[in-house]
Length: 373
Image (cartoon, rainbow, N blue to C red; front, side, top):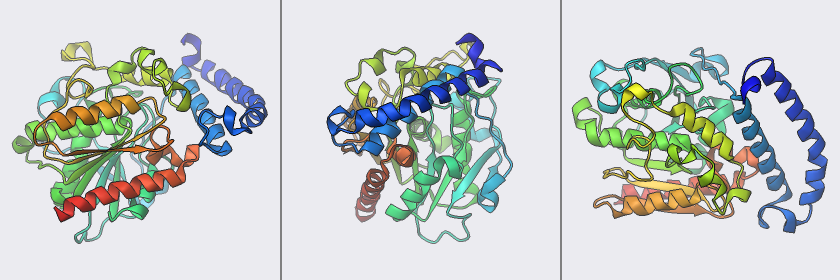
């Protein structure tokens, strides 16, 4: 990558990429007019085009190593924005202390549709956004589609989306995001006073990986740090193993490589940046990062949604099969027909709004079954 991951190289590359893709767009429209030439025959012309646009955007982001700065100011979120302070030191133990340079920090977060004022008996979703631990911030422009879809299609009354630290920024590799996830969960329980039994923890893509890390932490240390298990977990196209993205084999070898917008370069960029420091004594095979080989027992029921056409489909299916083999686990897989990666977050960007609504509705129905049990 070299000269193009610093300025002015980044600007030159970005302008060139925009120009080239604007030139290519009319040709793509003509090529995808017949349904037979689209990556999937069931896709609309709009879906085929938007998937290719997002695919190109992610490839270029990875090439120039785009930095996503995170701010703790409210910005456009205004009264829906909160800054969560770290909890007592005793809340952060075990894997959260493997890197002496990474310490618990303040975490911003956005409430949807508004900051709670008396919760009643409704469920609250703690949702961790996706983006390979490299992009996203949980704010309206990023996670607004996911949050409003969940609020509209399920019975949950609030969604809280933390702005956890991204690995593209200094001192934000593992375990920074896990520390932030613990802080956000503690905030809901200890400060907002939401019972754990009314919290649904969830995340899409990298946020799904982070959700699994939080659930493992609650299983192993919850009783020690005073954090009980949540009612349920919704995992949307979870990134099962960042380590499998360190090279292109897992992506390029997938039979779904041509029917998704996620690229090998994007996954590799995220995995390399999330890699723990050598001094930590762990790597991407840590059981808090790699769930392809390290499933665990959890009392939290898991609902896992994956797209039929996405490159992570087979990893997600294996994840469900492996979790189901562990005694006591309750896990359900839902395959979203003809869908690409992470439609709960990116549905509007890739033209899968209706499919995202159906996916959310199915997750809501799963939650209802738990209430009746």
